[in-house]
Image (cartoon, rainbow, N blue to C red):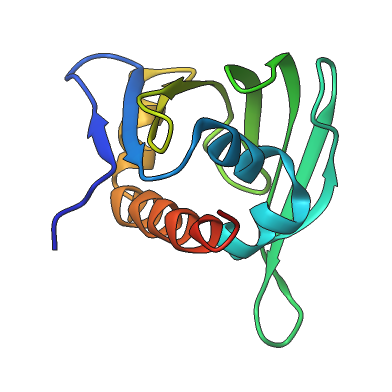
Amino acid sequence: MEQKTKINAEDGKQDLVITREFDLPLELLFKAYIEPEILEQWMGTKVLKLESKKHGSYEIQTSDPKGNVAFSANGVIHEFIPNRKITRTFEMENTPYGVQLEVYEFVQLTDDTSKLNMHVIYESVAQRDQVLKLPFAQGINWAHNRLQEIVNKLK
């Protein structure tokens, strides 16, 4: 199956660029990233905190069926321009991956389509390469496919 979310990771660089076009109006795509109820549905995680504003912060957590925390992440929102841009940090807790900087740019293509450009910067080339060894590409494609499916119902 073709992966609609594209990941560009140039050799020897500590960043990557992720792009995805959605059959969603820009406002709905942006809403999927800033409203906890929607975010929880497409990410399959619990939003413990989400302050969608400049200097806001967030915390997300995923538990296994027995209630044990399997994944936890948090960060600070440094730039927040509605329907255009979110710049934030992202840190997975209890992992060796460190803090990364993420820049999300939301672009209107037509009245009914939009594009997400993500620029993710890691502390080092080695750290980025370590993350890419995880099922990262499959995971982000799965999440973006779910986003499209769930947010479609809000149209």
